[in-house]
Image (tube, rainbow, N blue to C red; front, side, top):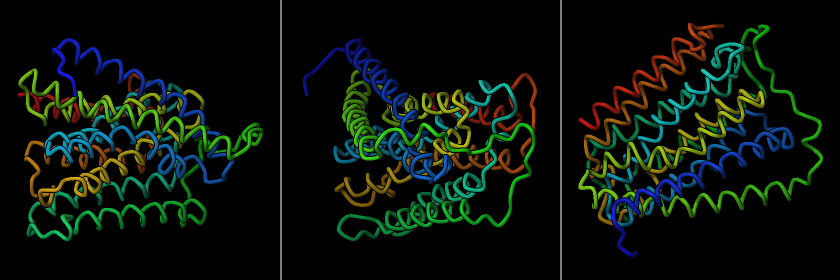
Length: 339
């Protein structure tokens, strides 16, 4: 790749981030329509379609970085993105003025997905302390992550269709009711449009990976800092814009499901990165500073899950206690990372 000075690299980074953000806005509109058209519901569609689609640039970034031997960038990009995206959900809570987002977006599927996310985040932490055994260069934890993710998505769909309990409905609860106009456009056309958008942000993710490595070298800063605070935020911009757009459109379960589902998919970055990393198990090459962000993700998701269960109707100054605590945890993690 050509060599550029630091100001040019930063300018290119901002431009690519803007492209990712604009594509993310389009994805949120298609995801809501597909949720109605396919009958999967907002929570499941948010976790699978929106979560996977908006995570594409992050996946490409981590895979490219791992293949190039930049382990710290690959891992911190994946785990740092979880913290950033959960913080975005707290920002969305501030923008929704009718009630706390955790209260209005009541969904059994989102509870299931948040619990599975915590389980997923514990796997890399356990893998670090296991023998560095690999099969064809892949650690068994990679397979475990994939199995847990698949089982979690299946359970989430089952809980939506045959829930064992229902959240108490209030005047602030937002029901997931399909819109009639969602059937106006052929399903095949909608799927092709989504795939086209995913291709664009995938290419943007490749650019972010290259620019992240180049900026780290030119500025003389660590890959963990770049990954957890720069590339993770840039590649998470689709989650921010899709969440805010979904909240504005009233698709609250889609907004929450998109963030939690995107975070679940972000953990799978490690599986993809482990396959791409050819020098052994990527889990045993993880720097403690990068592993720190897995623990931050567990803490933030635990607080979010608590909010989804307790469902406080209203907070102070238009923000719930859980959202405020999520932002506090993320801010503290950022400060500790740059110290």
